[in-house]
Structure formats: structure tokens, C-alpha cells
Image (cartoon, rainbow, N blue to C red; front, side):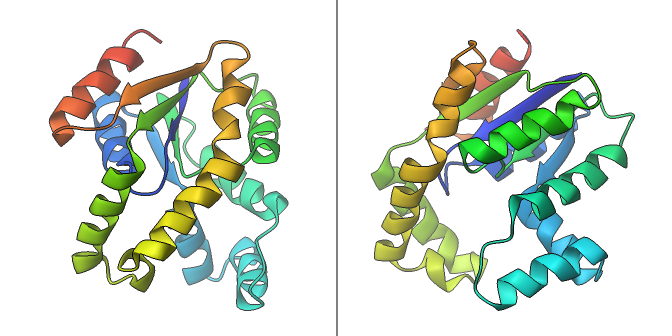
Length: 190
């Protein structure tokens, strides 16, 4: 089984590319944002627990997020692999993900980072704001803050997986199909 973390700052194209890769290779696409919306919307025990933290303006504990991931992974035993989109967001989450996968004698095959400049990210998210309905997508200072948070907290996950050669970088600039072809060339080597 191939398990991939599709990695990059907000607006780098992770969601778009993850869906395309999932379709082509028969991977389970796990977007933590979608997972949270599903669990909360369906008022599952994990969703209600997550909502209790969110309603207080607190971060949802990793144990709750991992619980949601475990449930999703266990519900799709026939997938050819998994693409994690938006998770892990820090090294502690990466370690927890490794532990979850190790329970079934599995592991992350590769972390693939989409390299996109900060200015391009800002441009993309401002464009996305025209249709996303998200107020945080329309404010450049908020976008740049999200990039800073990513660089501080999330970017170290790349180094974590590079310790044993599993981190890879792919140019995330160009047409969607060009970027997809670059990703497929890498996935085909895993």
C-alpha cells in the first residue's frame, strides 16, 4: 500500500492534486477539513468532542483528530493507498500518524511537498476568495499570517520525513495538469 502526505502551504494546490491522484491511483483521499465537517455535521461522538473545543476557540487535541483518521482508514480497507491532505500539521502529529499506521504494519511511503512561492500563494488565495465564501481568503495580511504559521509549525514535518529519505519536493507552479504529471512521475517510482 502506498501512503502519501501531500504537503504545502495553504493555496499550494494540495486539495486539487490530492483528488486527482486519488482518482487515478485508487487512493483514499483524507482531507482533515472534510473529515472534521463530516464528523461534526453528523454529530458523531468524535465530532461532538471536536466541536466542544472549536466552540471555545481552542485547538482540537491531536487524539481526537487521530481518532477521526483511524475511523476513516478502518472504513476503507480495500483502498490502494491513502493520500493525507492537510495532516500532519506538526511533528507531533506526524509521530502520531506513524504510530497509527504502524498498528497495521504500514507506514508513510512519501511526503510530497508542492513548492509554491509566498507571492503566488497570496495571489491564488485572493483569487479563490471570489468563490470560496471565506473571509480569511480575502485579506492579504491574514493570508500572510497563515503562511507564517505554516512555515513555523508545519514546514518542520518535511525535515522529519527527510531523515530517512521519504520527503520529496515537486514544483507547484504551472497548469494543473502539468503539476499533476510531475506528481504522477514521482508516485510511479514509489
